[in-house]
Image (cartoon, rainbow, N blue to C red; front, side, top):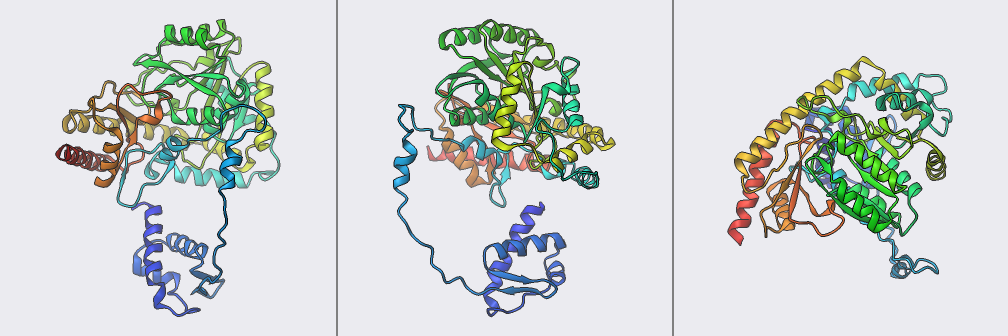
Length: 480
């Protein structure tokens, strides 16, 4: 059982029993709860903390936990309807209201209900995360002299140099800014490179987080179709010419959601086309450490062969470690780097030094390479398990491409199949899947599902998830 599930279940059990105790009555000791529910002391501590936050329990150091006095202050009710007017107005300008659609992002980071198998997430399952290595790195980082002092605005020099080496000889520490993960890096890049109201070219389909960032910044995403070899250069050139855009966002390596790998010759052409239009390429290199065992040699980042500063490179440690190790990097050359630096400083000052020190300790430890090999092998096995199960048990769902990296499969639904109905039926059957609609900046050509194999506990859970999805599709067919 996952730790987070154990905490939720214990908290619910205690919540149901709280009325058995009089106000001020003492609850069983932590040791008694550990023995009764067969959970760890950490689980008990976290469950009690949750009840304290809810106002149901109070704790007294050295004495134990007690039922709290009921809350008697009624919540004030007000009228917030005025906010609709305030949020829809944009000063004296004629700009459209800046509504932020975070549905696609929240879907990737939300924790599904207990008992639901998660094929919609965007992070490694706890069993794949290097928890011991991260804990050891955190301990060593905390003992470093000055670990809690103010870091350089650009980030620790040693960590910047490590990210630069990941790109190649073309990059140096002076080109790198440390960011609070990949999403923060994308936000900074788009704010730096395009003014509100401007068009920004994106792959179609593309990562919903890119679309959310662009729209929140007041930009207009313009789709450029991809195929199994990545974005189509001729369509990219036409889009630049038609829109006057000065930014193109792409994921050349194991693109999310299609898994496409941008062919090296196309990559060179993408940079050349952008340069000819005086535009930047934002390269979201999120999956470089998520290659599978059959991936072969990986193409170098676009930024590795870009002496003219066309490419702004985004990288992150989060995907291959933990959702909470939010350490990433922006790499850029020329005046644009100073703009990126200024925007990040205004937004957040800097990334906390203890987090940077922990990241540096982690990637410099022998455990790092072992972890990468383990993730590579496990993702390969899980991909094979999911792809095989889909082909055998869900033959009506088209699987046009099996990627050699990343953590998901992209499936096309039969024509006329309502995507939202499939997603809802799957959830009722006990499996969470990601709908395809949030991955498109315009009307999608068909219904799709994205199935992630990174957030499950293993191949047994993959088999059960496909069985539940099969049952959901059968139930929908009987209803139609």
